[in-house]
Image (cartoon, rainbow, N blue to C red; front, side, top):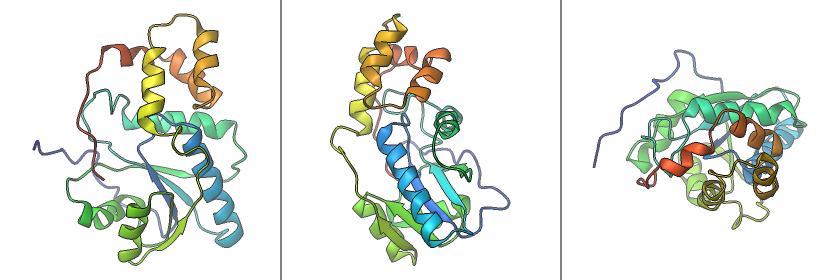
Length: 205
């Protein structure tokens, strides 16, 4: 197993206890949009003085078909979606490198997203890890979860990666990816990359 670099390093001043969501966002799709909207509503109703922190995982994975976009590109996808979303209080976006040690994931992630606040997810094993580490956890419902999974979205995007007709690309991808994100990906050539990438190991968070 290749040792992963811990890049980027943790911030000198991580956020205070917040409402945290975590994802790889490879790419940012409509399931992620549901998650952020749910988390922001929960925060507004239950902890209005807390920040919403969006943790972007796998910041240190090498580029391959399962990890085609850098954490900076994924953060830009999120920010582009936020421009057109109903979320008024801008979240804090923090990249977090993977470690090959799931039992110690939360202690590692806290260096980046801050210590125990509220963790919101639809991922049961991840919720259990955070609950065992003293976090308040909230399980969110997920609509169309089996269609809105990263590998399906990436595979559809890869099929469209060599298509030059922007309207056709938009039409095929918009059921799974927000339109604002698709347009940003097209304008920056982020879809074309998929045509030239090979498979890679699936991250463990």
